[in-house]
Length: 442
Image (cartoon, rainbow, N blue to C red; front, side, top):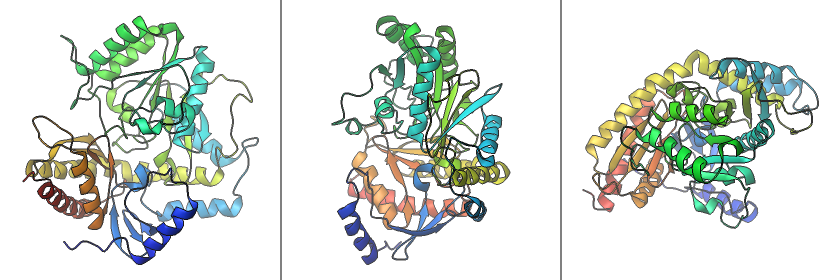
């Protein structure tokens, strides 16, 4: 297929203006300047059409400018746009009730509304310390939890996220995440990879570094996102839950990217059959409106009035968008994610059989990762090849994002159709073939 002439004249002009006034810290990828979108399709300012298979980093859950979400936003905006968290409003309360009904645990919940995923993480850190009276935490190598000071302390996917910002928050120890494709720890006899990691936490961390009584919480993503779309083995979370129960440690799951139906269940932790104590959400919760939440079992959220708060948390327009987003996922898109997500994974596995550079295809629903390697036996990461594939796909009208060392994430809107998957796979197939030829893998 003929590549697009990118960036176009208007896009180049916008990018030049951007460079004059916007912080250079933003991790910009390829030169896409958006004009409008609908569903899984987006158009740039020069009129070029793309299939969006990154969805604003898994944010546009119901597709771009879903008419029912747009209507909900408009109707709320006509009533009032803002009321601070010093007061009350219906949408905020209704959303809290709805989130309570969706939590992956028995019993009542309590919700703290935020504006982003990283703010949800910060709220959880404070609540865990307050509730337990302990100050220490355990996080995981490869994790991404955000860029504010507490959240970036837990983040361990790229060193440059921390460069120039030390000292960070104290009291966080990182341990290996159980990666079935690239295990960091040698499996112990009679244990799976997940159980081996939990044994390491108990023996080496709690046994040598931090007494269990001083650990407030273990914070982790049920599926590592930025770290490479890594789904842990089935034996991991049951063993981790047992460890937390024995040492009275809070299990805090960061579902900012993996939640809101993206894996075919409301929450990725549901695939593992355990109950967390605190759950964090954002990204797909409001179809692109800024919103997040830190939700805890009700008895845990025992901090007093004034101990934590914010100005914009529970913004009425964002809450209206979230309520409609949840309704659409319930009515249509959760099932679509299961069915079309499985169809997409099958298509990716067909590409894996065809292309020598695809070492692994993994995931559930529309949270899929494709790992590229220079050799399937040695599993040597092919980061430069991966980057070329991302750019070649963009030039042919498909938007993706990398993660990990050499992974492309496939995270289209949950509304994506089989025909859109078919079109995307044709583009990806050609991009992979061209990159393999360039890197002399064929």
